[in-house]
Image (cartoon, rainbow over all chains, first blue to last red; front, side):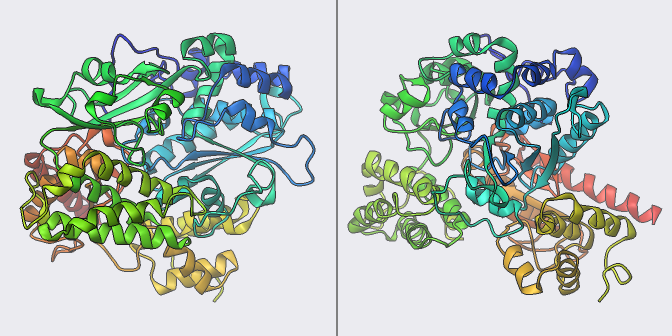
Length: 435
Length: 171
């Protein structure tokens, strides 16, 4: 069972029911659940979308797109049915926040899905979980069945004339399916190969109908926004970055865990106070601020507020909120190799820059880390990464290239220390890297 | 082949599939879950499994294979009764995942992608499983084990051995 952590600086909004048995529908209702959905049923779509816009809630999957704005793009009239699709494919290395939401508060995901359906006029929503999350899928399925039994889902939700159904779906192992168009392909029973955009899902999405796709954390946040009011929610965060974020702090820290902190919370403080500092009192070498695809930050770059805009200004991304802390005993070349190995494994091969780029960078770094690198390899790795950026259908190409560029540019010296037949000064796993 | 009369699946799973294909706006949406649930029961996607799934969805076997090969959890060869999947992605790697992986190899006497002689265990290195804050983490089939240390490995394995024996006596 994943360990729950706590810190006085936390503002528990999305996590406030964690550890209180809220997976049981009776407890969820006792803790204020489903009131927001009922309120939205009365208030109607325009009011919901206005509230979401005013809340400054931005997509928690990584891109940070304003949720209310996304919902407003769905046409009011549509010849084809509209759909809500909840993205629980959580696969970005360093990210495990949705894991806890499904485990501790599955009804918040259902309630958020209902509200999204009411906002855009959809009658059907899908909740898609990655295949590895089987035990969480079973929790979600039980929660959905309980919501049907209570009449919160079905032909007449909450005794109204409004219909809303939910179908849960399992993936079967694919990082790329976390990208929205690949997710729709997977749900249609195909390979998770991305679609070209435009048209965007809000216009032509699942089964060709207008579709809203949101990350599970975003959806689970929605009922709280309604319950506490958009203004109160927005006030918790920073400008244009409403509310809180579930930050997953992992790697070399004393107290790893998922902490719910206000948007804009200082990254340095997050590492040294909330997570208890670098493990064993060792020195800090680098921080990945938002999942493995976000460019690395140096120790002197972490005195920043963790919201989409401030991390962007610092040259990286807030991404999925997965903060990975790296101590001074770690080899960055090995870390870069493990990172690119992942993206090479997950690249679907549809776009050539991604397919070839991830493979050649992996090959180069493998050779480099094993002590057979040449000085020109460093520039070549950078060149390969630069030529992947912006040249692929889906963001997997960028996700692979951005961290590599960060490592090469910020740790060039460490790459050079591997040259001229010198053994890696840190690594214990050179043989593993050759796999 | 008529899927209703000549099924390779248990009556329970066959009934589940009958319902699953009708659940979605499009029959084919049942394909990925169906393949995974079939694999859970049969152990892997054999030719007969693929043929029956194709029949049930109403697409070609080639189409099924084309989709199945995309997903990393789907496999075309048997694995052990308990498939040990060690995450070595960044958060787990920083927390000692390779020591865990090596210990499993020693205890089981098999290498990467190996299967023990009794068919009880298989071992593989996998990508991020979404347990980064509780690293290092593994999955044995669908069970998570987190905050691991190499010395916890023998206990995990004996737990599954015990489970297999218990099942054996009930059989």
